[in-house]
Amino acid sequence: MNNIKLNGDVYCPSEEIKKFAIVKNWDDLNEFVSKDYQKFWENEAKELHWFNSWDKVLDDSNKPFFKWFTGAQCNIAYNCLDVHTQTSRRNKLALMWEGEKGEFRSLSYFALHRETCKFANVLKSLGVKKGDRVTIYMGRIPELAIAMLACARIGAIHSVVYGGFTVEALHERLEDSHSKVLIVSDGAYQRGKIVPLKSIVDEALQRAASVESVLVVRRTGEPINMESGRDMWYHELMALPIANNQNSIEIMDSEDPLFILYTSGTTGKPKAILHTHGGYMVGTYTTLKYVFDIHEEDRYWCAADPGWITGHSYIVYGPLLNGTTSFMYEGAPTYPYPNRWWQMIEKYGINILYTAPTAIRGLMRFGEAWPNRHDLSSLRLLGSVGEPINPEAWKWYHRVIGKEKCPIMDTWWQTETGMFMITPMPCVPLKPGSGTKPFPGIQMDILDENGKTVKPNEEGKLVIKTPWPAMIRTIYNNPDRYVTQYWSKFPGVYFTGDSAKKDEDGYYWIIGRVDDVIKVSGYRLGTAEVESALVSHSAVAEAAAIGLPHDIKGNAIHTFVILRAGVNKNEKLIEELRQHVAHELGPIAKPESITFVDSLPKTRSGKIMRRVLKARALGEDPKDLSTLEE
Ligand code: WT7
Image (cartoon, rainbow, N blue to C red; front, side, top):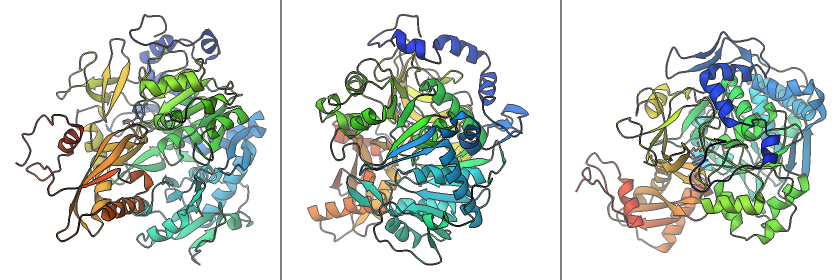
């Protein structure tokens, strides 16, 4: 990619960026890795600590249940913390944190290790054992990372539920995972208001039976209900003698589960994507190092939420594995003013900023004056993730934030892939809106309905043809669904659910989801979840949800509702239904519009044809209507 003449709007990295970068020539690396990708991942794995080495790098004897580094023993938390406390990184900052109200906290590797060990011992004393599930439901505070790492340390499987979800979404995830312990904060600050996380938990727990203990981190200090025998304060537990610094590490097999993370799929309930210790560790470590070009002195900020895969891989695990200093900010980008992010970049000297197109578009609309008031010269690299970035937002980000000297790493990946899959590196020439090419060693393709590779610039289905270390291992408790969901559309290859094009230079361009998943502000929501939240209201008989383009959110949810007989259609009911969805699922799922209808387009077998609704809303031709009922 470095030497050939590329077509279209191309941005080449400066000599300075290339000279500094770990990978100076992408083609050389790619050629080397493509010869033997297992050897490449093996070399990377050797940079990490293992209690025992592997017999095999990749075990593909039971496809599509691939295994990596079989026979090896490790613990990802040991690599995130213990290894650094044994070097001069002991006193280096692992985490810098700013609260929405302006408070600052920092934890060195030593301190983060200590807090994690203490909390791991608390969990153990509560009877949490290897393989048990622990749900974590918090705002963006350091305790969220501590809780995740403490689980990993003792071999418990964490299930982080995004703090923007509410009662029903939380309940469903607690039930499905059979979590014994729930870790929550009393509330979370968002735009100067408090999200009452603990009271959402109280309501969800009236519907969920498996939870025995609720551990509550004090963040806001607002009065909350504490149920005796069930609810305990984190700070009280952490003050007990049992919460000591003593070794709490569980030696894990490479393929032992690390976490589950729920994500929306084509139909029905969200599915629990399972990741494991060994492969996930190697995948996130390596990709972050090369793509965000991690240097010892960097201050790195991934502004995503830890409750999302981006936060798991590139706020918590990837940065700590690389021994880097991360910054975490609790609140909203525009609070109290739209310069908040730029102010913090200046204040903390951030070198790398990784965020989502929706955030860029949201900040862009306030104009250049806000960022221009701040010294952003510490920035070296920028990143984007979650949905396609429109070239206009890309150019604004590049010019106004990156001052035309910071390459933008547009990283395509998924909860399921665990790590970057299509991504540039700093040395790679960029085209705004394209994530460039697959990470070395990963073969991807774009197929037509018959499984044949499409021609350049033709749209098709995006698939992955080679296994990678951080890949999904299964859907927790549902291996059949894992096979049908990902490996059945095209035999032998992983289907991503996305449509894409490849241009004449081999650059990939993501078009969007082809299934019933809507990306709202980069968050993945299933039409089925929104529909079932609507139907759970007594006024609603049937509902259909679709995504339509939105300037800032990328997509917004629009719904069509058939009311029960005798219910009056009025504006008040529309507002009530929108609030109902927000209460059940979360504010991100609140429909942009609700239209009352008398019928919905369906197939003869009774499935709602959302694409017909969508085409109609966009004034487009719905194309093939042969399966429509009438
Ligand atoms: C879906 C996965 C991976 C972290 C965030 C999302 C879309 C993700 C990009 C990108 C275009 C992107 C895809 C993908 N997506 N990154 N850089 N360009 N689209 O994880 O919630 O599992 O969603 O997000 O549609 O399938 P996720």
